[in-house]
Length: 351
Image (cartoon, rainbow, N blue to C red):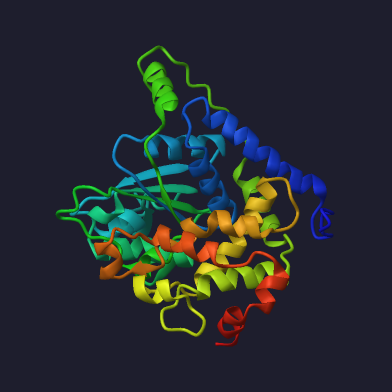
């Protein structure tokens, strides 16, 4: 397949995104040790105009990673610590009465909340009640908030990173699957390996110097987000993404037996959209001008793990959504001819 840049944007524009990825990695590497896969998925989500949920045990530098990313991209950053007593107005903002000292006239003025920033960290989102969660999710979807009948637009770019703590679930309010669907990716932040943890211990207990330099400005990020949408994707790659997502839907024609046995609910159309958009961003970050099936494969776990619900039988056997996605990828032909000839996929595409 040709690697020539399409006419909508120049090769220099695309090369800038590839170079930005490398420079962000370099700057983050001054503070964060390892976690390259997590960093890449955060950047893919950002440049796709999506939002991201991170899950990991405490102490894995999730907050530090996000705040450092904001500095690398020269974005305004706010951190919201979600607690059981947090109210929607504490997040979105509220109207206050303001008096003009000269005239004595009083009027209502909107006081923006911490949500009005380019990059927002919603820390431990599962610890706040559903009403406050819904206020955040509305802003993510609509990119605006409504207070007293007045609409207030969010900053552009606007990127929400929510963290969840998988332990200590008592007194928490886990996000329903329908609300998790608003997040483009769900990313697991795992423990570092021995060498990485050795370096973390060495750096954080010495007199290290934090010299992170900004790589991109907000205006440039908006331009690159527009660039991602212009990346061409072949019909074959679209069919490949569709075949993966449609195989998660229990009871549909052509769905593998193991999906019917292990899955309670499958992914909706938003999963396909995010696979393709993420594939476009990943292609540019890798320095390519077209999307490959390998891009879809790499992003499938992060896109599907929070949109596909395994049933009780799977949970009792210790089978996770990631295990099911891996099996779906294994039985899905990557080659266009094999995919079009397979009788099972003809049923999937016809249903």
